[in-house]
Structures are given as C-alpha cells and as structure tokens.
Picture 1 (spheres, rainbow, N blue to C red):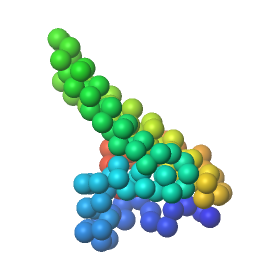
Picture 2: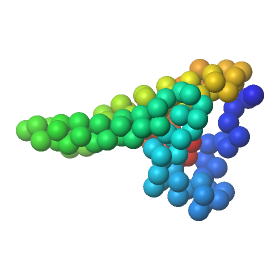
Picture 3: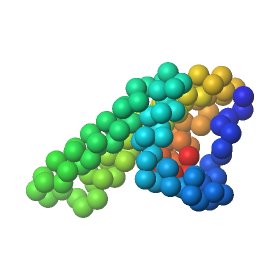
Length: 116
C-alpha cells in the first residue's frame, strides 16, 4: 500500500461528503476510523479536541496573554496527537513508508484539517 485511497485536498471533489464530515464531524469520523483500525479509542480524538478547548480558554484568562496564542498552541497540540495517530494508522495499513508524511500531516492538521 502506498498511502490512503483519498489524497490531500480531495475534499473539493464531493463537497457534501468530503467537506461536511471533516468540517462538522471530524473527531467522529477520525474516532471511528482509528477505533476500527485498533489505533486509538473512539473517544480519543474528541477528548483531545475538548481538552484543547478547555486549556485554550484557561490560557485566555491569563492577564497579558498574547491574543491568538492559546488557540494556536492548542491547534499544534491537537495536530501532534492527530498526526501521530495517522502515522500509526499507516503502520496498521502496512504503508511502505508510514513515517515519511509526519511533518506534512502535522502542518495540514494545524492549517487545513479537512484537507486530510
């Protein structure tokens, strides 16, 4: 197996299916995929997302906090987990090079998660 069937930015081909699910229900879709493959719990992506929102809100109440820093740092935190699980999923699917795409996945989860 080279990589996933659906490539990056294929969300623009079928807007209803490939864009609705990643935008509105990304953690549900990810949880289902990861739990089916035995990579992570069904609830793990949702818990990472919720945890990051709680931490971002707590960071936001710190006096003098730079605007946007809590959200940006939590996006990177989420991306770390999601990209790691995506690499584990590649290993489960016996990809020829499961670790080759880690930095790209990290960047895309941070900047354009629906594109994965």
